[in-house]
Image (cartoon, rainbow, N blue to C red; front, top):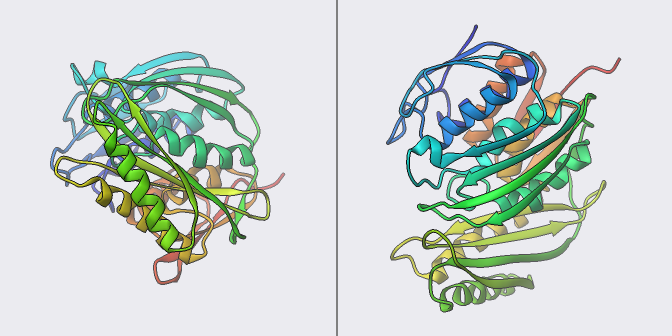
Length: 357
């Protein structure tokens, strides 16, 4: 039994999700203590509990402590991961409405299913565009293209948008599993900026709000000599919500790479400030010269150490989230993982994955 301290480092739900994914992949029984101990609402929240039960479903795991607010969980895989057809709904764990992230639930089961031969079809319901989680738009435009370069074939179809706090969103996912190791990646430099595009979206709110967000974002980027195509979008759904989703596509050696930046609206926050925050994050990354944005760097840790050979990526920021994710990965897999700062906040990740035969 491998025991992990869930309050280590960044101390959030990522420790849980990474541990569940690696436990399912390796078959290693795992106990996680002090889950999200430093958070305002510690323990398992609905999206975490959904991720736990999703991981258990795909490998027939035995669970102890799988209940809301639990700070201790035991996860004992019952066998290899089984590709198939699954439905995971955050609302069921919440015992009512919830905008728990569908992206974080998917993150937990994605690689375990990708490493087993066969096709999996997933339906996941909850929040599709919520704070502190990769949006479905980000997964489609940033994460999946890099995983495809590493050999993973997957598709995500956005059926319904779901904003925080009401949720009500749904995605359909198809993952084509494989039995071989992933290809390593080399993302250490980037070329010219091809384009910037995005969406300013609102749900159940006046049409002027996305128009104001889009207009302000275009103006801020134009001041930095970047022309952007940003479309306003008005949606209907379970509850109100607003956000702007920006993407910057750069030239790179093995094909274009896209970085993503998101800011969500909140009550009392002017639309223009929402747009400015996302643009500032984009410009900070753009000026760094790094190809990989901080969120993608965090999400690439597991694929990199599961790849065959050595991978290297340069990111515009070494986050505490990234360092914590790397620590969890090394508890399961005794492989070299070097996360080093290069200049200011930028840094490089070097992962030596599976050895060549």
